[in-house]
Image (cartoon, rainbow, N blue to C red; front, side, top):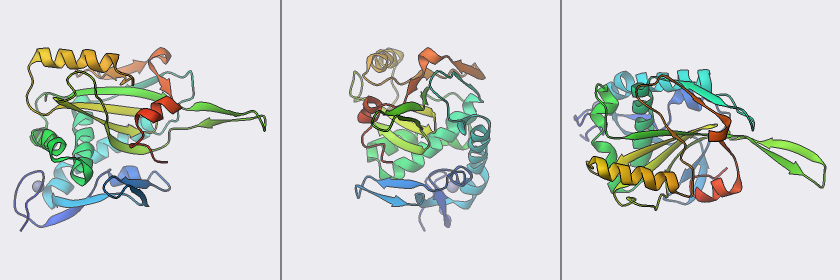
Length: 251
Ligand SMILES: [Zn+2]
């Protein structure tokens, strides 16, 4: 019998959605990109390596939490010039996002990236401590698309669920991986070390991230429960942003 990817027990394994089912249901259609096959398919990706207890008891709480944040915040498509706010429980949000990232990594990331998540499994399942992970949020508003020939204007809207690796190649990129979980206008970034790193390496990394070509937003602090992201800290859906994430975007 195979073992559960979370608790490591031998038990019958159940089908687990990479994205919480309660989120997927909010989208009319979802296209999934298979990195291994370099193509899209309709439907939502699943994996089958989680036991029923982890899936239906421990992890489903995180799914419900993400769905409640969707209803409170993420469903909203923000227009250019709008500020955003988010009220959150840092630990639950981080656990829920790590879970999506870990699920997605098992489906199509390298062994090294999967391993970076494995040290955080206990935190995903139970919480209770502060793991060495940085959580950032970038607000990406809709952008105006003007068609001069037709004299029309419409909004290009970020309306998607995406989980992908960010091709960060700045200082310390060999020691950390940056993962993105984008839910409509709310693009979260998780920065995970491949192994435990001392504070000065983290500092070098944060300097590198801040100066990097793609803006990875603001750090979500554990001690804060509501963040307001002012307009000058948001960005909008634009070709350079998408260009940096070529493999991640496929709509
Ligand atoms: Zn399990």
